[in-house]
Length: 259
View: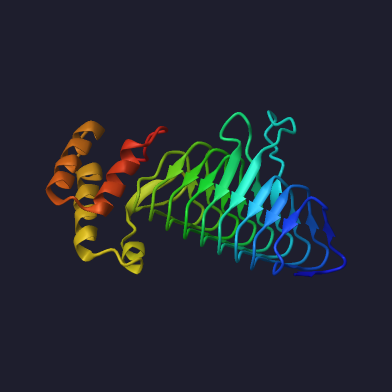
């Protein structure tokens, strides 16, 4: 384990032997850092926080800080981070609140570019990209393989489905179904994330089915319930996994989808 002598490490922190901690870092109480993780200079990590294997945390990041939510009164809440994530310069991630799940979760293989913010009680899946200055408010759920453009803002309690894409400066106040591409302020639907689907090796057959479902939902002028009935029929005829992801992201929406 390489810990720079200028860093301050709590006696209660649990740090695996091959973790690297650069100069002028502060590792607080009840922090657990697993093997292969590299923390660069001037980072602050507070507990209760668990950081998994092979994460890379760049300088001036603040990980596991108390939430500024006014309801927070110092309760023991958590941040759980998976493996193989990259947190670029100045990333901020807050722990949960007891009014919700009590835990903020970050999955595996995510890239959070400079000055990204993840607020309290968020759930972030795997293999997502957050471009510079993306700001995610509290209680937000982010799926897998999502791309969030620079300077985007996501309103609290929103959900972003798997493989969706948001353009730069997009303001999101409703749920975004899986595979859908949005842009502008306020957000509007501009199509499907076909490039993202192809890059992630989704078959052309599945992409064609999702395009059909997208047209049913957004192009035929149907009510939402009517659209879902038609997409249900399409799914029953094909039993396609990715079409199921699209359908589920709509049915599971509690805030209402952007349409």
